[in-house]
Image (cartoon, rainbow, N blue to C red; front, side, top):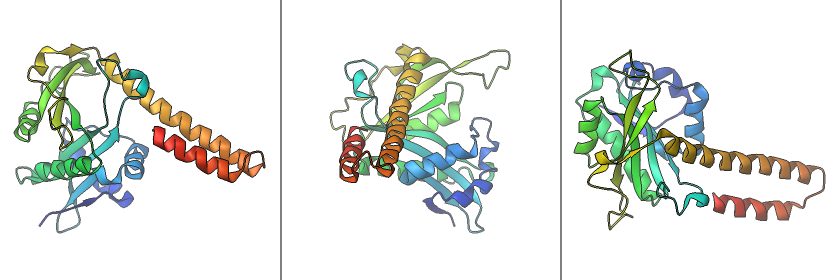
Length: 235
């Protein structure tokens, strides 16, 4: 019997089996905890009857900053699959599909336009899996990966940016039929992501400074609460 539930910090020591897949990225511990803290509904694990973690999916909700609104590369509010993997002995049991469906349900609940992900163009099994779930290639990100999974002599590999529209995208405005023909430089993807991350960091540091002002008596707590609500709305 397999149980799907939200990730808990104590699960960190149980992810090793899932990360044996050469296509699965292994991150530092703080990275997993950041997703747990910010997007808990998009971080799900599959647990067997013995308490072993045999699969997990982690994702986030985001959008490009407003400064990119009129750019062709602007990303509206959407969910992004950062990682999804299943332990080798637990494959072909529908666990990957179940985990992905859980994240998609969370994306719909958050009123996201679509779910997207990046996958190596050589990872044919994963590409076939995502297509079977309704994902399609939106664009090709050239040299997105800093290594090549199939040819160690090559220093980079392209990625497919794949998308699946959610309930909000009734008119299917955020997908395309000929995504393989649309190639972009990785700087386009990285710049938007880094700008979004910078905007969050600036807001977090600003709030810390304002809390210090309250402590030292130079800012009223009522003003801080008002500014905090305004900032959260902006993000």
